Length: 247
Image (cartoon, rainbow, N blue to C red; front, top):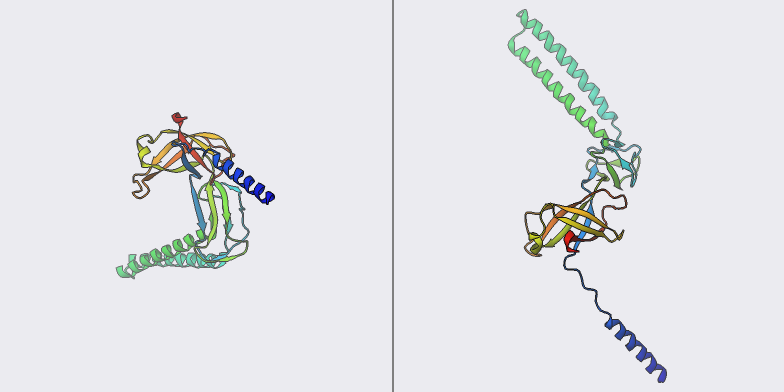
């Protein structure tokens, strides 16, 4: 019995000690934030085909216009050759009809039809050339590969996601704040952003304020831009922000 009594007293003492710890009050001026890239997109295949070697891997930095992967386009290239031949033939026929028309050997309708055939062949070649552009997936802006969805030599359908690409440079800060703070938060307002993962504070300025308040949560969405690019910061990190003069 004495042993049980001692144990109970020890548990009660530890519970009392825990309850006695004062709660750390939250700073009413702190606003939760999330870092995001200025540009981000998912690049998808615009045609069905078989991928070649991937020229980009997870985390790799790529420049604007860099080819990330190519697809096999033998069939489209063959159709392009046929379209070029048909256009050349239509042009030759049109020139011949014009010559015959000058000699009164061909009527106006024949010349007009020959001109239409040239226009049709020109459009067909333009269409095939546009499809040839789908054979390579290029980076629309410089940045880093955030995710790779496919493997080399994989056969994909049109619309299949291939890569997630995020831009380099200074990150933007997303935050939702109580609508009551709108009178203090305007475009250009200075903020101090503290990131949990690094434990550091970075200067930023409000760059955009949503034109609509969430009627249910009574909050408004804002964006801010960090004043510079910091190599240690990565999109997805979180933290809190305060008005620069509120510290």
